[in-house]
Image (cartoon, rainbow, N blue to C red):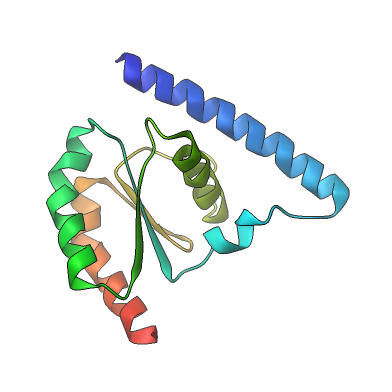
Length: 135
């Protein structure tokens, strides 16, 4: 339970910091350099938490997808203990139009968001095939 509370507090701090940064960039008429790359629909972001049982349940599936689709840029990022990955999680979700992410496991491809141990295995491979065909 402490992990969840710490994660929620950290996520709140990150969102607040991102909001302040957005206001600063907007006032300056610029955008942060990371924003264009996170909205890329050819990058597959898989966000998970170390110790999350739902994430652990689909870990073999995700590892299989990275092997089956080696030409697709699948980025597997742990967000409960890695602050840099938490920032990426916030930025990628914001670029997808999600202001309050629902948690992990989560896959984001451009503006497409898949959440949970049922939806990700059910739908992800179709998106990976489509990305692979574009290459």
